[in-house]
Length: 151
Image 1: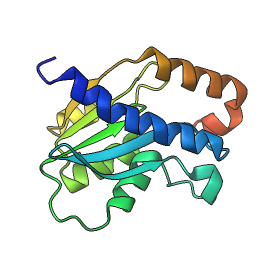
Image 2: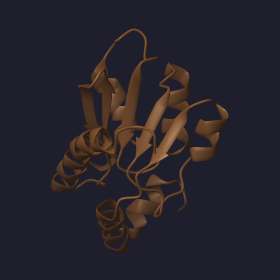
Image 3: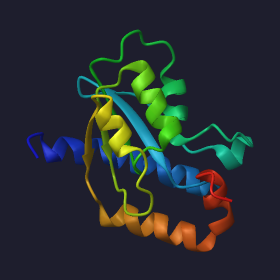
Image 4: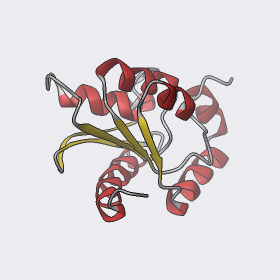
């Protein structure tokens, strides 16, 4: 990996804190942060359960919380889980050039779609996040399958 792993881990820890916040609220433990020039612009977590909103995935919540920031061309989106097609579409729509995912073992997401659209995707493949999602999926299987549209 050519980029600084320490930097990626620093911002992924922020996304993990968001995931844990969502879990503490009774939601799905997926978190995200949007970073520009080494500064967190916004943060979010999956709020589908809390808000009864099927579109409120972590990445969407994070981008929404950023508000109108103008151009996204120099931002990085960190997500604890590889983004799905909904969230990948938002990344492409707003021109976010890089996504750093915590893991894709539990959900492959839309990595190929992002890469086809010119987005650089880095998967940190973190055991902590694999374990957290596996535990959630095992104990909340119905909610998980609803979240990924596989009922």
